[in-house]
Length: 270
Image 1 (cartoon, rainbow, N blue to C red):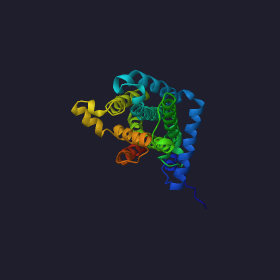
Image 2 (cartoon, rainbow, N blue to C red; image 1 turned 90 degrees about the vertical axis):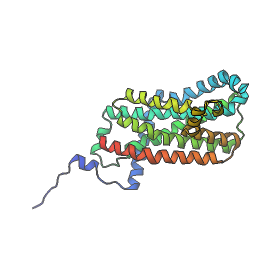
Image 3 (cartoon, helix red, strand yellow; image 1 turned 180 degrees about the horizontal axis):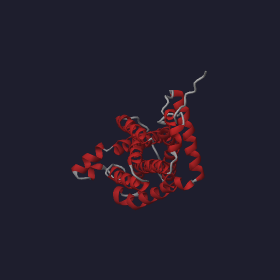
Image 4 (tube, rainbow, N blue to C red; image 1 turned 60 degrees about the horizontal axis):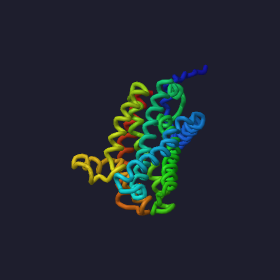
C-alpha cells in the first residue's frame, strides 16, 4: 500500500534554494525584465532622452552664471548629471516593482520553487543596463559640447562602473519603498520627495562652499555627493582617491542596510 503526500503550493514557494539556483533564477528574471524594456521603449526615456536634454540645458543655462563660461562648468556638471540621472532611474525601479505586485505578477512566483530574492534581484540586475546607457550618453553629450575628461578612457570607464554600482545600491532604497507602498502613484510621490533633496542638496550642480553652513554640512555627507566627488576624481583626473573609497563604502553601507530590509519586507508581502 503506497501513500501519496500532497504538497501545498505555499510549501513549494518556500522551498530552500541553493546559491547556484538563486543566481540562475535571478539572471532568468533579469532577462525577462530586459525583454520588457525592449518591448516598451518608453520606459527607457529617463535614461536616453533625459541625459540629452539635461546636459545641454544645465550646461548652457548655468555654465556662465556659476563658472563664468560653459567650458569651465562642464567638468563640474557632467559627473553631477550622471549622479542625478542614475538616481532618477532608481526611482523607476520601485515604481515598476509596485506595479508588478499590484497586477499580480508576483502571485505566480508564490507556487514556484524559486528563491525569494530572485524576483527582486532580477529586475535590479537588468537596471544595470539603464544606468550604463544613462552614464555613457551623458559623457557622450558632454564630449560633443566640449567636455574633455582628463582621466581619459580608463577614467571614464571607471566612472561609468562606479555610477552603475551606485545606482544599483541606491535602488535598494526605492525597492523598499515599492514593497511598502500601497500603489505605484504613492511610491513615485514618496520616491521623488527623497530624490529631489538628495540631488539638489548635493555638490551635483554647484560647489558646496557656496551654501549656508547647515546645508553645506548635509551636502558633504550626502551619499550622492560622495559618489559625484568620486566620479569627478575618476573622470576629470583619472585618480583613485579617498573620495572613491568613501563612495564605495557608502554604497556598501546602503546595500547592507536596505537590501536585508527589502528582502524581509518582500517575504512578508509574498
